[in-house]
Each structure stands twice: as C-alpha cells, then as structure tokens.
Length: 402
Image (cartoon, rainbow, N blue to C red; front, top):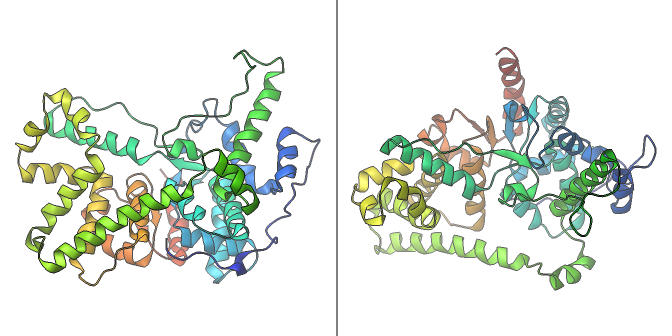
C-alpha cells in the first residue's frame, strides 16, 4: 500500500459521471444525479442492500463466496483499467474477471478500514473519485469487521482452546459499509421525528434507505471536495487526528529499531520482545475481560510463563501475522519503518485469517511466504495481479466442484 495514484488515472471513460436512468426516477437515481455518481458504479452495492433485511449484515450465503482482498496498488491498477488505460494487459483482464465474478455472486472483494484510510490520504479529488468508482463497483462496499471485534474473538477462542472453556459466540466477519468495519453498527433508518414509522409504503421507505446508505458509503470512501472541508471541520472532521495516530504507531517502531541498533534492547531476545510488545499495545485493553472467566488476573496470566503466553499469541491468527511481520522487519537492520508498514500490517492481519486470496506488496508477501501465520489459514498471499489472474479461474472451478 505504498504508491499513490498519478493523475493519468483520472478520466471518465469508465462510465458517464451522471447516472443514466433506465426507468422512472427513483430516490437512488435522483441522489446519484445530485452527486454526479455513475449508476453502474453502485449496482453491486444496491444488490447487496436488497439481499439483506438486517443491514449492515450481508444476505444469507454471501460470506460463503470466494473472498479476494486487494491492496491499494491493485485498486489503482484496476481504476486505470476501468478508464481504458491499463498499465499492463493483465490489469484489464483481472478487472473484467473480478467485475464479472462479483456481479455473478461468485466472489466477494472486501475492504478493511485500512482501505478507506489509504484512499483518504490521497490529496487529489479526481484520483479519489476514480478509486471510489472501481472500489464501489467491485466491492459493493463489503467490509471486514473491525480488528477490535475480530481480535477479541480470536483471543477468546485461543483462551478457550488452551484453558478448556466454552468457545465464544461467533461474530459476523463480513458486512456492509465503513461503519461495520469500525464496529459502529449503525445504518440510515427512516423514522418520524418522534420515532414512529413514516406514513409511506414499505417499498418506498426501503428505496430511500438504500439510496441513502449506498450514496453515503460512496461519499465516505471518496472523501470531501476541497470546498467542503471547512464545513466538515466545523462539525468535527479531523483527519489530522488519524495522521497523528499513524505517526505515533510508526514512531514506536522507529524507536524500537534504534534501541536494537544501539544495544538498549537485546537482539537475542527479539522474538520474546516482539510478542510482548504486541500483547501490550494491541491486547492490553482486551486481555483483562477475556481472562476473567477463567479466574485469572494479570498476575495469574503471566504466571503461566513466557513460552505459554507466546504460544497463545501465535494461536491468535491476526496477531500471528502482525508478529511475523514485526519480527522479520526488526531482524533487518537496514529497514526504515514508516506508516506504510503499519497500514500494510493492519490490512493483511485483518484479511489473511478470513480471505481465500490476499494481495499485498512484494515486500510483505516475501516476509509472509511459508510463514505458519499464513499456512495455517490456507490463504494464498500474492503480490501481482498477473498471479491473481493465474489463480482465479482455478479457485473458482475448485469451489464450484465442492
């Protein structure tokens, strides 16, 4: 997730910027016209909304489809292909294949919160619009649940396996929209001012709610136009706060790398330290509640010993991915830590435990190659769209044969 798209990506070849109505004007068509969104861009998102009566939950059976997670660099390539200017021939073929497979219901291409953050870091509205178009078209705004939700469930599952407790209640891994991906289970619901139902036919209410949800998701992904930023700032829009968190997390890695370099941290105990850092920074808030049912407090937990604690962390799929990347990164004394490393780790640690294919950059794919954190999940980790093209048909065929 490193390269921001260049201006050559921008253009309108992928579809008119104004929705073309095939039928009478509906709330959705009117909204698309108002915001200049192409109708074909949100067709899949509308279908996902139509398939569920419990938004933001996906419709029955949707999560059983082949799941492919894409890195920002891949979305950039697909955006250019959508505009008729692919960088490589395989980019256009993969774009066509994913568009067809998601439209037919064979494939889900989910997003994570990292996807939204990466797009939001791009300054050009034109570039963000081109990305929003292709992401909406192929993902339909399907999202992976918040890491806080998933890691808590993974932690409780690992504890139950090791301590003999009952397994935790299953969680919904895939849902619709950015709020689902950040653990805010909210949705646009039309009600009277006092909370009662509107005096409108149920079908009309559903149409209006769907239009608001789909257009709202698109606008959140695309981000504001420059002229809208001052109004948003007045109601609490603070993108700089996210940047500060990002910088602080990267700063911790830079500081620890410096400690390893000058001997303040013991390189011979790097594996133990990386596990301990993950436990402190990522699980510190969740651990007390998770161990309480077993009659454990922090002292009792750590009394089980370093090896037991490290093995427990390795049993947590998302933790194992992040720990692997951290450990290998710190063993490379020449590595320069940046925010990209943090966002890459966030993305793949969320996607690998739950997706069949995860696209990432070449460096991350190399670090995870043959890692137990990946092989245990059976996930195919790739770095090039040409590799995805080679694998996709076979994966779909084998799935259809089940």
